[in-house]
Structures are given as C-alpha cells and as structure tokens.
Length: 399
Image 1 (tube, rainbow, N blue to C red):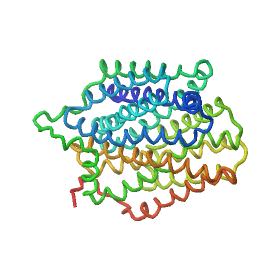
Image 2: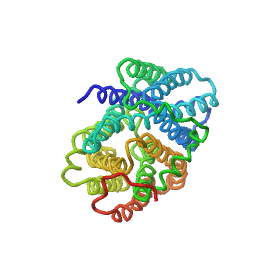
Image 3: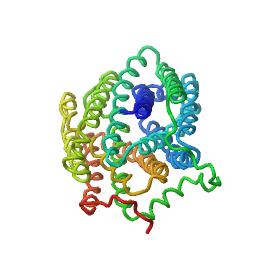
Image 4: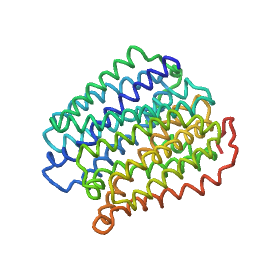
C-alpha cells in the first residue's frame, strides 16, 4: 500500500472519529442549551442544517480541487473544522451551536476531495477495493468516536468537542507534512464565479445518460442511510430503554463490522460477482436487517443482526466504482463533488422526513419507521435491474 493512500485513509479515520464523538452527546447538549426536553425536531433541524451546508459546498470544494489541486483545499477544510469544534466546545447559546453546525457542514465537504484523491492515485481495477478501504476507515472512526464520546460526555458534556478539535488539528498536521499532491491544479484555467455555483456540477452530471440511473440509486441509498442518524438513539431509548453508553456501544459495533466487511469483503465480492450483483447483495442484506429491526422488541437482537447490516455496506463502494468509470480522470473531482452533494441533499431532507414520520409512528408502532425505510429502498431495485449487465468502461460523453 503506497504512502499517499495510507495518509489519506488515516485522515479519513481521524475525521470520522471527530464526527462520531459528537453523536452520543448532541441530544443531551441540545436539551441543555435549548432548555427543552423535546428535541426530536430540533435534532432533525440541526442534522438538516449540517447537510444543507455540506450540499452547497461539496461541489464547490470538488471543483476547486480540480482547479487548484486536492491538497490546499483539504488543508483549508481541516483547519476550519478544528477552529469550529473549539468554538462549539464553549458555545453558551443555541444560536452559536447552530452557526457551529453550519460551519461543520461546510468543512465536512472535504470528503469529496478525499474521494477524488483516492480516485487520482488508483487504477480503475483498484478503485472498488480502495473505496471499500475508505469506507472501512470511516467505519473504524465510528467505532472509536461514539464510544469515546459517550464516555467523555459523562465526564463533561462539552469535552467531545475539545477532543474533536484536537483530532482535526492533528489531521491538518498529518496532511500538511505527509500528504503529497495527487493532481496539480489546472493553473492556466480561468477562475469564474460560475465555478462556485453548487448546482452547476449537478447539471453537468445530468448530461451523462449513463450516470442518471446510478445517481438516482446513489441518492436513494443515502436517503435511506439517514434513518440511522435521525432516529437510532431515540428508537433505542423508546424500544430497548437503552442509555447513552449502550447507544454508543451499538454504534461502535456497527462501525466495527462495517469496517471489516468493507475492508475485506468488498474487493472479493466485486471480483466474484461484479459491481452490479455486489450492489444488489448489499441492498438485500440491509433490507433484511431493517426488517428484523422493525419486528424486534429486544435490544440483544440488534447485535445479532449487526453482521447482516455490515454486509449491506459492500453495496456503496461497488456503486461508487461504477460511477467513477463513467467519467474521465480530469472530471473525477467534479464527479465526487456531485456525489457528495447528493449525499448532503439526502441528508437535508432525510432527517426531517424520518424524524417527522417517527414522531407520528411513535405512539403506535415505533418499529414501523424501518418499514418506511425499506419501501424507499425498494425504489432502487428496478433502477438497478434496468442497468445493463455490462457497463461500458470507457469514458461516457454528454448526451
């Protein structure tokens, strides 16, 4: 494994730890700062705000990384994240937390740059496996982050933000001293304000016919993925009577098994089944696990079905690999910006939709929220079946 890949994967892991630290304590912090006990809708709004900013800035950072290089854009994002977490650690008022979450969403858009970096240093044959490693390292971060955040939050509610700031500062130093540039910027290209239009890359992507069904599947999968962050904690409290530590442990177990599956199973699954069938297998596993969640009333069953949840994780790297094969190397940063925007777009509406839906289902059958998620997921199946068995490897031209 080359040095650049090791450094970027380590940076991704540290970033995920910083994000994961906040998850277990954010509801308690909102109760404390917002002076209210009913925080379900407020939590949904905070998640949506974070994602809205990520949506607006992911294409911008992706395009900027194509123009000026990956490394400088990544460094600026990491420095901003470190400062933001430090401010949030001492925010006394709700409005400061709101501003902090908005800035956190902007800086989190650096994941588009990280995925473009991996594309730059990988051959087409290596990308599925390396995207699997990318998600695996993110999963490892979510093993460490939520558990550590739950422990630290019991000591002092604000301490996870301080640790997140330190981790982002370490991430900045790692990238500054050890991360080489993967693709120098196009110095001669004239920079215009139209480049900053977050909807321009989306319009560009829609001109590629082969990308449209794949992007639709990508959007659906990410929309369903928001159900976990939106209602996992509240659902676990309502149905299993879990405390913060158990919620953190369950998220840690989820991250651990996802990391194992994506690091060691994605590559072999794609090699044996092909990207299309690996994607279908991942979707089937995740739907099965959500069905068990809908019908389960026992917390221990969550840990039993974690391996099935983990197998569901092989679908996303396979889909990403399919997508990257449809555009040339000069546009990979723009494509990754588009994909990150689709993630953010799903994450804007997903938490609002699932939190409102769960609020309505909660008095009668909380588990029905997982059936709603399954129904949305099933919309991707006909799209996937409609894709040709063998997708073209060469660059697809607009129109």
